[in-house]
Image (cartoon, rainbow, N blue to C red; front, side):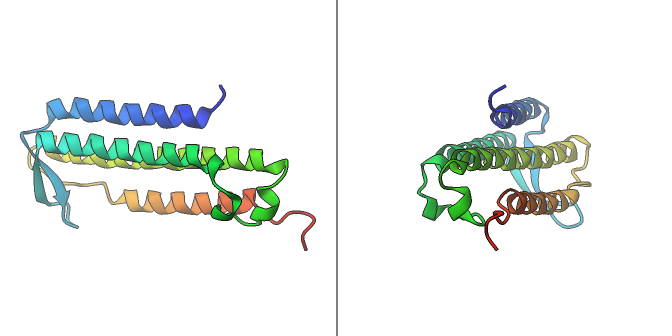
Length: 166
């Protein structure tokens, strides 16, 4: 398997889009799509509009992160902001560093696809349970925050101070 992050990203994206299409057939004609802090609906959309918005958002996110993964190899070094870039992005280390960054973009994109998939699943459940009410989506900001911390730590570890610098 040459690029597992690429396969994971596109597999999750295809699954999320497939789930959106399946949910479309199950949702009521008027879908609660926005909820207040108590989980009560305060914004509605037509089922078709909701499904189109969900798929368009997923495709835009897919294009953005795939574009970042593709484009990062083509950027001049001065436009890439990682610690100790003059060491990690020159010579024989450049190819490995750029491959790592490409996978990082795809993994961040995968995490966001999962995040939106869970959010859309929560919206789906809120709409098919009778009276719409969002109950457990509050954990999503915590997961996103944890993901940001993990990404920052991974970048700092990968691009740590080179051994020859004091």
